[in-house]
Length: 250
Image (cartoon, rainbow, N blue to C red; front, side, top):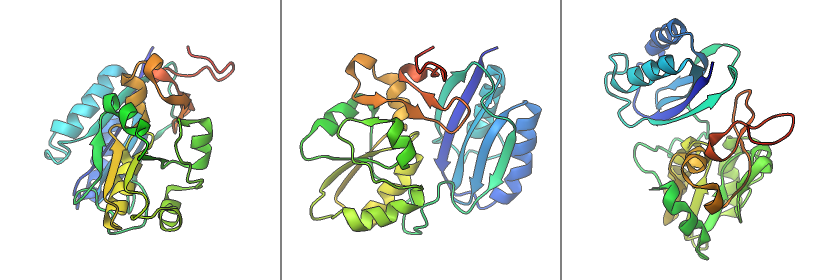
């Protein structure tokens, strides 16, 4: 059976996130879903997998059900498939942040960088005045990245603030285009740079996963594979699962 995988996030005010944990966990368990969901006062973030109909029911509940009461009306949601269940169990966890940066001024619900669709990304990063910035961890960058992108060489996203303070200058870097796996880290990173006075900050809407899904391989400026945080390890163009033994598309 083909397993459907949903990666999702949204920054939204969820002051009752602690009370949401058990109803959400029970709902997922009833659908026999596995994966990880993070809840915080600033929103939701996660990746889960299960039968296609169960994943569709879960996505409908997030966006339209009574549990969240319409607060997740702008959910960033991407689907892919797996040949086998890529998670061992279900986890619904409470966190201070749905992606940890540690900067209270970086609030994507107040200000965020300019979203760039996958179809427009190639032109943006090809412009000579654009600094292309990979916001992911070093081991992820090593597996694949966009041509000409700067690697901040960080071990965790929380180190991005230090990198920005030491290596980026609002007076010098007037136009920054950043990207990450699904888009969530760029939301925080772009909000952080805007709060520090950077003029033009862009980020790839839907992240690398959306780009690999929508941009034909022949036109792609992506090189390598995209690391994903589950047992599939990496995805290629068309969000195809990589064969772990031979490094080829299946």
